[in-house]
Length: 471
Ligand code: GDP
Image (tube, rainbow, N blue to C red; front, top):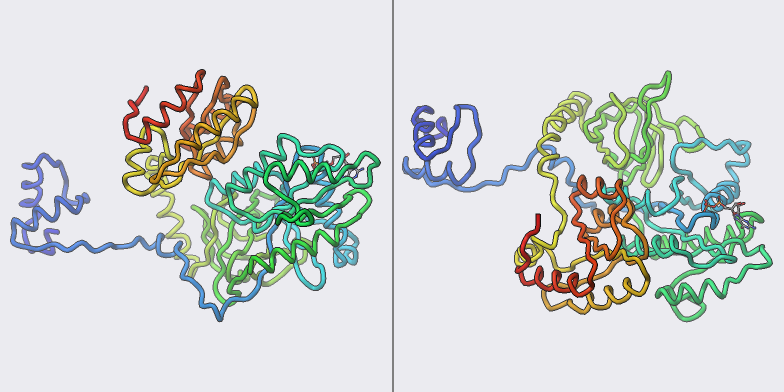
């Protein structure tokens, strides 16, 4: 500032100190104070937003429609424990012709590519809504389609409901695979009835939920399921531009003996090539070698493709975004800058919505929909709270209960709250220890009540900005 105005810096420092702002010559001051000082010297100050180079790199320039080409869908399998998620993934991988040609060697890199009717589908190897929501909480939404597995002999179970709510909160299309239809006790119609009660009405009953009967064990209906996935992918119009430097997300990373840091990247746009300078979180590198999910050495990987990448300086973190930059020197510089910034960022980690600051967020217009997760000791309380809370919606805020269930508050609930900017309300239940710690880290607001009326009154008060903070 002194240089720009051609005055002695000590003069400015004196002026600032007189205002009670203790600074040294190489310290930054904020715009307001800089403007006031400049005015005293007869300068008019204009505010110019200078974007950080890192921010600019992270921002993706939108592609021209003409450059876009269809890309394979990325699919996550979810469902209640023992309903057959793992078996279904295995069955799907086994239908893959190229795999059979390869002698069925599965290279576990975190995702698998399956081909049907000359079209590719990518499956993430870690099933379940926990992994899905954890990635989402990190800002890495990579799943395009969810396959929900429901065992035909067991029907909709608590984790089925949980998965459905996690998927709904993420607004990702879902296909239901009704599994184990080989069993004599299988009752697909019961599953469909239970799904309908949750608002997922099967297509054949006039709704828009695609249900595919399958048997992962007996290999029945797998092709049909894959075809349905392609159909949904087509409706979703999934596209990317393969002709530009890659952007992607790290889905797995580890240190491997003899290879160094190894990470699996899902390319989301552009094409990743050998020799590319890369940056992922605070880690940089240069793509030395790449392997596909069948363990084959490849030179480039286009949109939606999972690839194992060698050449990182350190092990990056799952969920980190990967970008290609001009050269390794730049990548290193940016990685180092990020490391410095990270400490600051940790401190500035944003509080998710809380009841105390709800009103100001409504006023700012940053909250138009308040998401709530309810956990209670009995189903009756879940229902009663859900109804009363949703009825509080007004013109300014819509209150939406994105998940309600019986039981203690779990880490998964906190992850969902973090990913969906939600408040958790516990009624006659407590958070598990891990959940409590995670909530502190993720800055998720958990409110515990023993009387329904008090919960309702608190939310009412919060909406009007009348809630007294409790410490
Ligand atoms: P996950 O916990 O959802 O991953 O379920 P698994 O894939 O581990 O399957 C749980 C159990 O159900 C295993 O004993 C499987 O052999 C069995 N199973 C999975 N799919 C089928 C199926 O289509 N039919 C029958 N009869 N059993 C199945």
